[in-house]
Amino acid sequence: MICRDWRGEPVCAIQPLYAVERERWRRRLFWDGGATWDVVERARRSRALPGLVLRDGAAIAGWAFFLLHQDTLQIGAFVARTQGATRRLLDGILASETARSAGTQLLFTFSEAPALHAALTASDFAVEPYAYLERPCSGRGRSSGGRGDPALPAWDPRFHDPLSRLLATAYGDAEPTRPFARGGSDGDWREYVSQLTATEGCGRLLPDESVVVPGDAGLDAAVLTTRIAADTAHIAQAAVAPACRRRGLGRLAIETALDRIAAAGYARATLLVSGRNAVARRMYAGLGFVERSAFVSACRSGQPRRLNSPALDTGGVRIFR
Image (cartoon, rainbow, N blue to C red; front, top):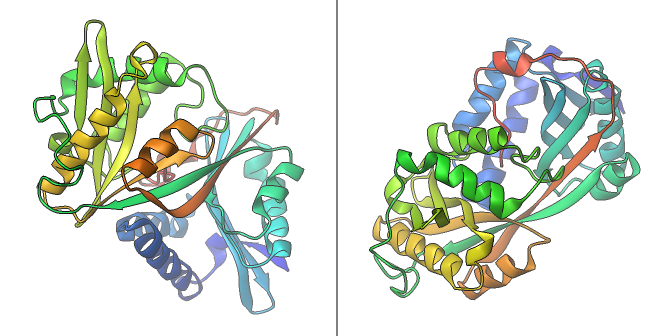
């Protein structure tokens, strides 16, 4: 098997790869990802987005794309058919000039590549599993049995900084395998909230279907909801202040968001949760969410550092969170 720079591949070889991913996003995530792959292809053809195609003879056995943002390599897709292809593709990425220029390598992708967890661990990555959950909406205003609180405020831009502070306290310090705001600084959290509310990296924000729970010192809890397809709403973020936990606020905010999602006519709600967050997983299971797909988030640090940012030239490519 031979790794080749995907920027030299003809369009006719790459388009079928996108078609498979579009269908996987639609079937497994209920996500309309067509526009995302159009952006990826424009960046590839302009040579702004590095990537590899792993060829086994005439067949493509694996492929990936990645970019360098400041000193961090971000691997945005990783597809392999066999265990050997997984290992060879990962080795090819890490041996690339782009990766060797990075102080940190990050990956967030479907966990389906054979033996991916083992390959990442063998290459000194810290690895964390994530589950993608889905819950059908049972009808207008009935998604949680009407147990939400209609009086809770919806999202408003004035909550931007309070939400940033809530997330900072709810998630704590830096966490290398967290697929967002890994550094844990105040600036990281403000940037993350801006990404959720002002861009479409995780779907388009639905302000009216989002929920905030004001408190004396800011926000006690919040749920941000986005639109990822015409019939699917995605709970992109949910958090409760540590001092307010075990009071049912998280469940109340989620149930309120589900009521609003159903009332808006969406057929289902989806969300992503860490495999280590047993408390949240039990709550979501109690609300009728079931697992539809699995992801892996991985991080490796300690490589040479060099500031560079071709990510700024990719026309808006963002890694799925």
